[in-house]
Length: 470
Image (tube, rainbow, N blue to C red; front, side):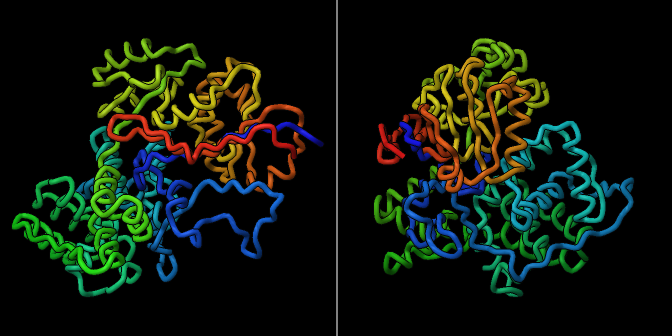
């Protein structure tokens, strides 16, 4: 069937690595475009995709540490009522989350944004199964610490491992260290070096965790390494690789210092020069801020949201770019505990993602295909613009993340126009019988960045193909 197809490809990434948390561990297409094509996904294991198939791969997982050669920490039986009150709750929860991310493929942002009523009980169950005991429940302060520590460790993992293995002679490679011990050391080093917590408290609490979850010898190792890190930091003698030699050697050193993949550093150095690459990596590692989007689908305006934030005494500022958005630098846990997300009054969403929707400019009655939709931020924002008329076909290969999208659509009263579909867009595009409608293909990655307070639109990544016949 001949059909008129309008396609917008917008390649987005809020450039923070890992988290940020806000920041996902998924490194998106924008990174792949700056990398060696040989590591870019999009090929079948046996043969290439045929030319008549829509090549629309939109994400790249960058993980230099595979789970090969590693053994999961065995699940230890224990009594659910048994609580080890001596162990720091936020450190135990952080260690278990980091294990789930590194060995189980969990997403840091989804773990931090879990607002279900039984989320705390599930967290305690994971701690119980992994460590063999339960801790005291996480309060609001500890929950914030878990989010900050997990995001920070994921973001600075390469640098933290360099410090640890500069002081640890028992293993020459990350895979040779026990996974749980490795996470405890990363947490301790991050707390001392990046958060500036009192070294005595950090050493004592992490040693207690290591001894309780592993054995006395592991606690002794944690004690020795963390004390040495604290001493070297106080003397300003923390080890760092020397940035010297050819470009390849410099890239390797900078990748450790700023905790970025070597291929990315090399490509940025080629395009931006060494100083430009350093500036971008420094910004990339800065703590993320949060934005809230008022849910217009429920009739909530930004002014309504501002009134609620004022009642909660949450510091905020209005977005200069999007009329539905409010920026937060702190207080997100207050918003969560007040039920604003659970009741669908607002949603956590980056302004860069909102700008993508403004480019698409959804209109009532349109059918829009979001090719890599989960967990659904842009899909739901577009749905709110349809005013109940039209359809969002939300496609993603990950069923678990699609469930998050569907749950959010119900909370925001947008489920009548959002249709989730588990599929790969590369096969969906050639098997779906197109009708004479105007479709928008919008992968989840779109290069619209809020950089240093100004909007940057990279037009090379916004490609519009009009009046194409398939």
